[in-house]
Length: 97
Length: 195
Image (cartoon, rainbow over the protein chains, first blue to last red):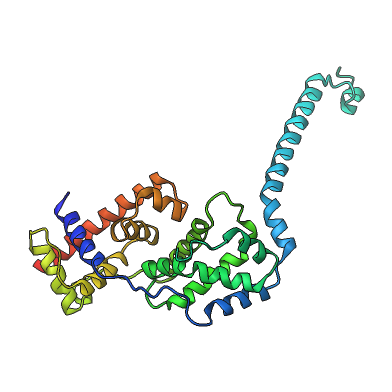
């Protein structure tokens, strides 16, 4: 342990020796006020439902998007690989095939 | 917790169906836990009752999200710790600590600690606690929380992890960073004293 760390530990030990405040009960009227405030606030069920499902929905949407892109690309790719240019108007007009 | 026979599960069920008496009992039951956390991490100039009120309002507003994966008291502790950290973060970072910022007794305590090589600590606990608070103010809020719990509340890494929701490696890193910053503070103060 370095000198500086020992200095901190000495201070921490001395600070710990000070007794903690023992009054830990709620002040008079505090719990009534809190319960009133909490219960009077209308609970937004739709918002809670949105929060609950939003992340899952986002993940599902991303997965669907990725799948759609993958399938779309593979079909697009295979279309182009098989594309001989026979249906192309320019090719037909100039008889390039 | 003071009341071991408190039916927490039943109380939570009644709070979920908007039972005001149950909400009142829940606040009374949890107040000692919350106020201890608030007092330990209380940012300066924020009355403890205001901070406790914020914590309870957050708890009630997020009650639907509690799924029982961790004990309810741990879940509330995490809200309390996060709220305190948010308050610390909202306050302007305190400027560099100087000897001139210390009261006469705090400066005396620090001088004794820096110059006295014996292992017995300073005798003025009140001034020491004030001084410790000023040193902790120099740390980042998350690092401060970790070092406060480790060195002043003597909690284990596992306990801190349960109370904050942070991983154990993250806590060790924060403790290391906080100790290094404290060492640098001591060195800076010692050098400035010599000038």
